[in-house]
Length: 307
Image 1: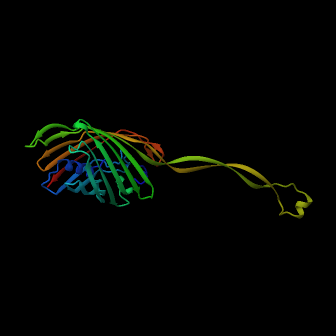
Image 2: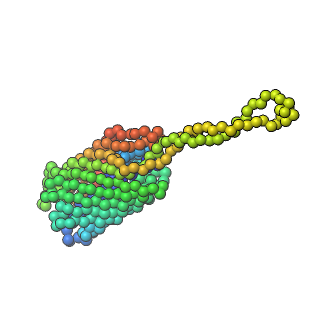
Image 3: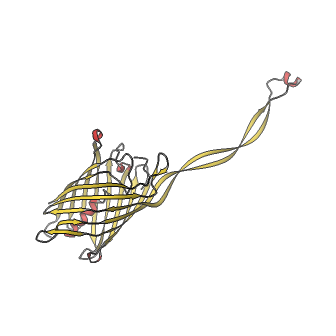
């Protein structure tokens, strides 16, 4: 997994997205909302990327959201890799969600995440130290929502990367329940484009001129017989070709993701299921230095309760 040096999400959008949802519906009668939940992710990815060693994970979470938009969230990471399953660590994310208008048609969020994940973990996030994230959105008249985000990643190998996202989504209520008609079944078709920096090793060749001395066999002469340890030498120049590798970091298109989040609200409870279809671009296998751009599927499912 450490070979995947690219760079920024699928799972980590959760704290800011949830805080944004709660800030949209918060009332003035309560100062703090608490949300506890657990989510199963069939294959933990990052910016549309996955590694061959990636595993399904269980993500328990706890989020505190104030009516002013401040929030702090903690997520645990448990890989579900058969008899190798285990606790991999956690992340902590403080942040702030905001709106530019009373109806919250325009706004955004900012957050910072610190990771405490074991270095030997098979999950893709174990190479991170921290990330800084920001997002702006526009949803004029609640017709369609356009979001643009940026994430700056601090890696454990002292190299930093940046990832940008552009997302288009639309909330569709299939069923509304409750007195306020804010509960029920909702689907949100979403298309996401990822672009950012990634590192790879480029092979190149250099040629150099090398001088060397070569012993020249001598004919038998009276001088050679008298001085047998004095072979003659000649100096020649040779062209030497050497293979080298260097690390290259480039900003490229990373992936395209199509998803269909399905949410069912029952009073304080929320049941979620989201299938994803992801097409990576310009992805490099750092073992063979070949491209791996096949289409793949994953899904998340979980439950939250707010109190």
